[in-house]
Length: 194
Image (cartoon, rainbow, N blue to C red; front, side, top):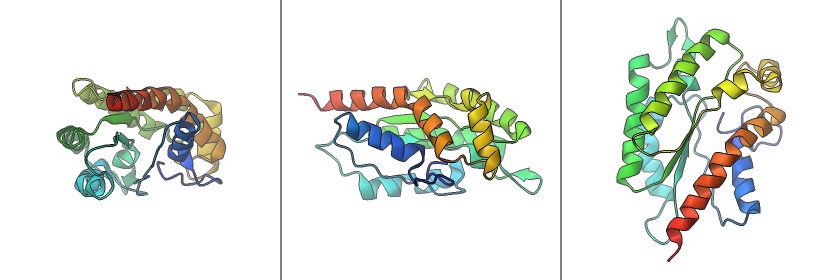
């Protein structure tokens, strides 16, 4: 989802938000580190090394935007790819690691799929993620409910592979995330002011 699978423009929602920030006057370098199929546990394993290679200390406002969870609930056979009890500890560890590096984080919750049974799991995961982010003072944007009830999103996802939309769906998701993104960028810029 983060890498924009199915998007004819190859920008996905992350690329759209980076372009929005640049258009609004921010000097941004965006690294989209999404890996198709990664669970939160896999992201936890690679997060710190990925940041160390790309985010030099000092002088620049840096931060990380996370969005994952769908691959945690997807089934390979009868079992979810990541056991329910391992999902939230992965998120907590990732956010703790970002905090230890003084990396401001923004969390965008998992979007809806074409599968209503998996959507019920994702809705529960969405609430759990929000609850973990709150005490860590990490802004959380839940998009699941808005997308699950949106006919355009449902049509876009169903027309592709049941998980990824096409360009119009990514436009919709970027639009939902734009307010949280703008506020987060503004906070980052304020941290640089003397």
